[in-house]
Length: 313
Image (cartoon, rainbow, N blue to C red; front, side, top):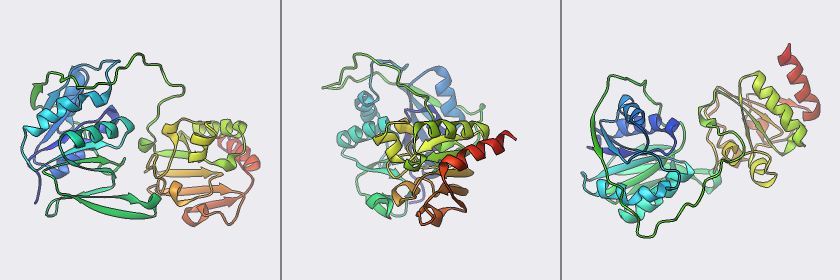
C-alpha cells in the first residue's frame, strides 16, 4: 500500500504532538487527532497538519489519560480500516496504547524507530537491550504504534490551516482507577529529546557535589543535563525523565558530552543519534571511547572544574 486513508494520533505531552502528526502525514492521506485541552490546542493540531480533530474536552486533574481509551476506541472502531494509531513513546501514552490494543483487538509495537507500509503495517524497534533491531508486522486491521523520539521531523506550523472538528462525549470506563489527589513532582520537567546540547553524567561523576558542577557547566554552554540509569534509578540523584538509554530517552542533539559514563550499549543506544559525542573518563579502556568523536582520559574531579573555568573565560 502507498498510504493509509486515515491515521489517528494522540499525545499526552504537547511538545510531542507535532512530530507525531508528522509521522501520520507521512503514512496517511488524512490525520485525525484526539485533543484534550483548550481551543488553542485544537488550533495547534490543525496548524501542524491534522485535518480532523476529535475533541475530548478540557484537561481534568483527577482523570487519568488511560480513562480516555473507551472514548477513543468507539471513534476508531467506527472509522475506515485498515488504520493506524500513533502515540509518542511516553509513559502515559504507552499505558493508553496498551488499553486500546486490548479493546480494539489491535496489534501494538512500542518504541518504533521506523514504520513501513509495504504490504501491510510493520515497524522496527530495538530488542535485546539495544543489541539488535527487530522488525514486526501487525496483521490486525487496526495497528497501534508508539514512536521513539525524533523519528519524524515536524513540519513548520501554519496558522492558516484548519479542518473538521467533532466533540466526543466522555465514555466512563467500566472499572476506572480513581485519582484522589495530584502532587507536583520534585524537579523540573525536561524533554531531552528536543535539546540541542546535552551533558550526560554517570557513576564516574563520583558525588553530588560534582553533579552540581556538571549542572553549572550545562548552564554555561546552554545544555540540558541527563544521566545514565544508575544515577536516576539507583542513586536517585536525578529525575527518571533525564535517564538516557534503551528504556529511557533517545537523544538527537548537536552535541553530547558524557562525563564519567562507561559507555555500555544500553546507554549508548540512547546517545548514538548525537551529531558529535565527547567523553571524559578516567579509564582509557572504557567502551565510551569507541563511540566518541573526541575523548579525554582524565579524573572528573580535575577535568570538570577546569572545563567550567574555561567556559567562564
